[in-house]
Length: 341
View (cartoon, rainbow, N blue to C red):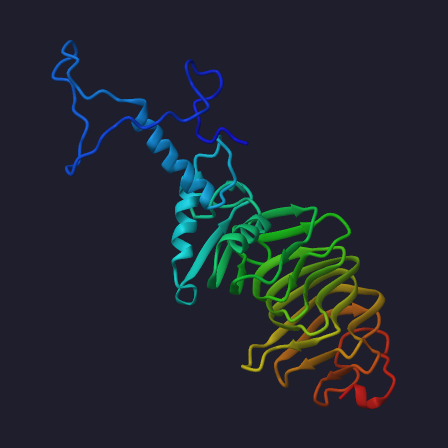
């Protein structure tokens, strides 16, 4: 149990049981009075009862709001006030913006422009625990973020998320262990203007997630998947995508993946000497689909490796662009011609 906002055990005459309140109250408000002079000592006396009442009010607000108790944290009361306000807000009428800065931020902050978080995951966790909103936007400042774990968004009371970087070459996420990059589970997410290096999937949508990725720079490290889509998920990729390094798959789908969008937002995929290892540039399996919107997708640069793989009753729709549409130096594979249209 924390001595929340208490005097401390080394304070003289501090006690651990609250004394009875000996004050009496009338109908008129009472106020403090200054002494008429330093020697007069005729100002209002400050009884312990009064201080104990204020302390009790503060403690009740913090504890009731579920704020983590830490006497070194000067934001506890502010956090309690924010959460109280949110509990009485109408979530579908408001959106909220939070900020992340790896240089000036601190994960103990509240995520404002002047007091940003240091990490994206801290912002996501804080928002998921305390907010209910139609939309949350997390603005990530320029810088390099070296991460040991994947960034995860799970199902929550947030209807829509947006993770906005400062630019593909400005906001860089390096995932240093054998892990995914961004993993979105049963959530609606727009993510854009960032660069990612990840040993596994850079951006992965799964379990009824609906993800829109655009203006993304991905560097593969061997077994990487640039954009992944799991069962019952939808993943759209558009804007300018820059690819570097070695991948097992660039576009891997077991769900429904769109290249380009149905409102004519194009996908320009720039391949900077990309190598495909044991996999394919486009890979669909387990009833997955890749749907290439007509007239909106273009590839440039060079790719070595297999163009595509279609397995387990999966389909790639290119609308007649032919089997050489996806870049690569090795022909694609499928079980029946109807699987590649």
